[in-house]
Every structure is written in C-alpha cells, then in structure tokens.
Length: 331
Image (cartoon, rainbow, N blue to C red):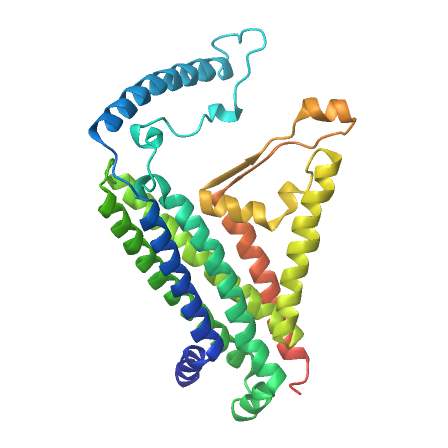
C-alpha cells in the first residue's frame, strides 16, 4: 500500500494538468498582488484623526442600538411603533477607524474576503484535479493495467483518493501561505492602521484550515463522480449542470416568484456557512403577503452544520464510487 501511495503521489505532481493548474494559480496570485499594489495608499494623520472621531460616534450609536435590541428581544422593553430589529440583534461588526478610512488596501479589514476568494479558486481546482486524476486512468485504460498488477480494487481506488486529497491539501496550504505573505507585503508597503490581535490571528488560521478542507472536499467529490462515470468529462459535466441548472436556475426561478425557497436546499448555502461561520436567510413575510406566497421558516446555518452537510454529500458520493468499483468489471 505504501509503494502504491508513493507511486500515485509522484504521478499526481508529474501530470501536465497539475502543473498547469499550479501555474495558473501562481499567475493569478501575481496579478492580484500587483493590482492591490497599484491601489494601496497611506492615510495621512489628518485622515486617521477624522476616521477615529467618526468611528467613535458610529460605535456609540451601534452600542445604543444593540442594547435596545437586546432588551426588546429579551422582553425587558416594548418596541416603539414601527421599530424593527435584525434577527439576533446582528448589526454586523462594530465600527472602527479602519472601516471608515478611504484607502486602497488593509489586510486587517480585507483578509476574510481574500480567503473566501481563495476558497472558491482552490475548491474548483481541487474538483478538476480530483476528477482528471482518476478519470484519465479509466478512459486511457491505465486503471485496467493497474488492476492486473494490483487486483485489490478498493485498495487501488483508496490509494488514488488519498494521494489526490493529500496533494490538494499540500498545494492549498502552500498557496494560502504564499497568498497571505504576498498581501501582508502589500499592506506593509502602505502602512498599517490597525494591528492584528491574537484573536484575529487565530481566526485567520482557523479560516485557512476551513479553506484547505473545502479544497480537499472538492477534490474528493470530483474524484468520486469521475470514478463512477469512468471519465473526467462526467464529473465536469455533472458539476457544470449542477451549478447552471440547480444553483443558478433556482435563483432565477425563485427570483421571479419573489421568495427563494431553495436556499436551505442548495449546497452553496452550506459552503457559505462553513466559510463565514454562519449563514442566515430570512423570508420576507410582508413581500409574500403582497405576492400571495406562503413562505417557509427562515433558514440559519452554522459552520458545524455546513461542514456536516458537505461531509455527508462527499461521503455518499464516495461510497457510490467504491460500490461501483467493486460491482463492475474493470474493462
């Protein structure tokens, strides 16, 4: 098994599609870094002082609204006529001077968006690498030859799966490290307004772990679909069809209706919950009364729930791949 894993790992990184994917990711990193370098600027002392003053005023209003909301939702006070509050008193982040400064780039402020963009890129790259890694083996006859040498079907498929998942995890980890270092360099060139606290660093590291695990899940999903269909194009076709017909199609159709009932049945909702740690969708009851629809209950998901749903989807499809491997002929 060890020799098989070593051979599969070597084959993964010697394939042209892997090399091309790494080059494309590196090129995108270079372009984005260069673009943010052009937009950066250093705030003046006057701009910082003005932003600090405005942030203090906005923070006072924020604290007052939050206090009133918590009292109303806990039943200690009655709301005034026409007064509305967000679900769970979620007013977003507390205003800071960094948020109110008008300058090009702030790592402290923008790193979550950068990591979410990296998550999408790495998940798609993982899906393609996982699908092509096993799909080409089936379509070219390489899998048949390998099974003649090592007839343990489940072990062969498991070795390929472990190789591609660990490979994608390694690539994603290195990519995120370089990505973080590059944008820290950009931020250092423009001066730092707010420093990263210990909790910010922990949050960044945990988000990085979730990004890597999402990329691994994408690789495993692409691998499983391609193994079931015995061709790379099967996985790519299923992926594109799901995105266009179900994800995008549901948004368009329910957008015409006026209320999106599919929100809690779409995988993208749970991917969002996994990445940003929570995801909430509230049905507009007033809008439904006008349009005559009957809304379902509001949907709210945590990162634990999102991770569980993603893991279940991947596990079910992988189980189908292993069952298919055992039940069907190799040729």
